[in-house]
Length: 158
Image 1: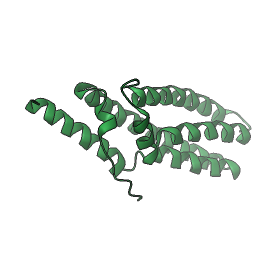
Image 2: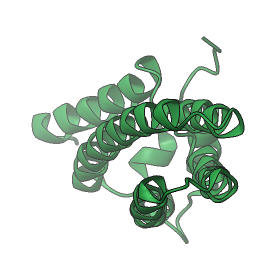
Image 3: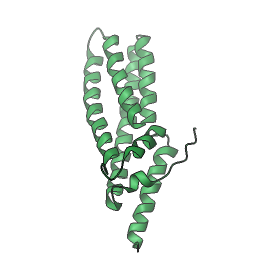
Image 4: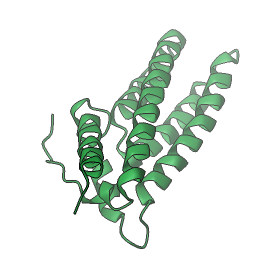
């Protein structure tokens, strides 16, 4: 029989997960990742997100440096952002992916100020997403590794 504490934690995990969707931080790709998680790989989603975060930190650093070069190499920036967008898409990081697309549009227009402004917004979205996912996984670990995969999400499109 479940204790009130475990029941409360399970509710919190479900609410945190739902808020990620409701606030537009993740999309249906996150569900696809969860569906790949099973008893053989109980922390699959968290591991993939951790790799995403490590890769994102690397790319953010490189893009920061590239934006400081004169003249700005828009082709390199576009390539790095293409990688970032792909990583974001793979975990369903919806808001980050949108900012990547906007950044790439500014790159193609060779608009340095647009790139810098959008990159700052992208870093803020990424930081918020990372913080929210860290909290979500912290709670999910407390209720057990299979809980994240067993939650259901309606596949409504906003």
